[in-house]
Amino acid sequence: MTFLDIRAIRKDYGPITAVSDVTLAIREGEFMTFLGPSGSGKSTTLYILAGFEDPTKGDILLNGTTLLSTPSHKRNIGMVFQRYTLFPHLTVGENVAFPLRIRRLPQAEISARVRAALALVRLDGFEDRKPAAMSGGQQQRVALARALIYRPPILLMDEPLSALDKQLREEIQFEIRRIHQETGVTILYVTHDQEEALRLSDRIAVFNKGKIEQIGSGADLYAAPATRFVAGFIGDSNFIDAEIVSAAGGRAVVALPGGATLADVPLHGGAGKGQAALMLRPERIDLVPPGGAALTGTVGDLTFLGNNTQVFVDLPGAARLSVRVPFGHRGLEGLAPGSPVGLAFNPSSAHAFAS
Image 1 (cartoon, rainbow, N blue to C red):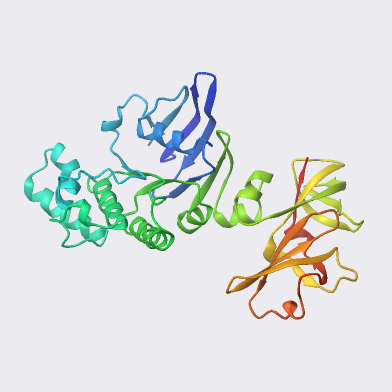
Image 2 (cartoon, helix red, strand yellow):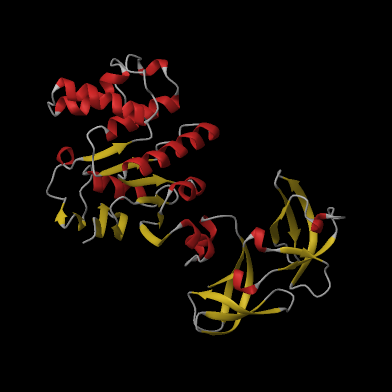
């Protein structure tokens, strides 16, 4: 039996459909991230799970039993929001203890659990501080401790780190991953930040226009995107216009601008001839002498980024491709804006998306 089963959830707001046919099976103890741009339906799906919104259609089952007839405050689901939602007049210890006090647990048990929850988020000794005397990262840890203190089987997190700066965000990401590993709680996490999703998740559900476009591990989504949207949203991507010459078995022969052809290119969304967008990852392209390369162009710009250099190559017809070359690679020798250069790549690492 699936631990958490989301079945064909739909949510309409009048004529606007925010979520359409979202179906997802989640394993117990899994870290599942809902990733997508603003307005893609990921937070609405989370709020339906929490009981803050009612679906127009569909069902949600926990261990085979529907949740829809259970009000939000009785679902025993933890929630962490973007805003810390701490009570400013209460101390850290009182904030964390609040869910247990409304459940009328004995004071001795409340005190023990508060100490354990604060130790889990590495805030030992902070019980008597007020939220205003803490940093944003510390306040978010308090919110996390409060959400976990009553030991919910599921923890929902809606953009919890988006208000933090990059360094602090990465620090708390590491802590969230550690806490997940230590507690085994099932986490559903909403973000628009692909790097955050890749760093944290066991699996990622990519949302677009109210639907899930693809579900998989970060490596699966990066290496084998099923749609052009996923290819463009996960990782850095180049797209160039191409033409499908022939196709069979999910592979295609593709004609590139300039006349060169590539065989054995993974094909998505088409079964025959026609126009396509060819996707190339910047780190899968090699810079080579221009003679005989699949694509040739002119170096437009070079940007040193520390462990790699981003080289922009202008192709005939105004297309500009990004190539990432590791630090110290000999392919950078002698390159400068205006230099002619060839681009080589393995056809199986490219992806063709039929128009």
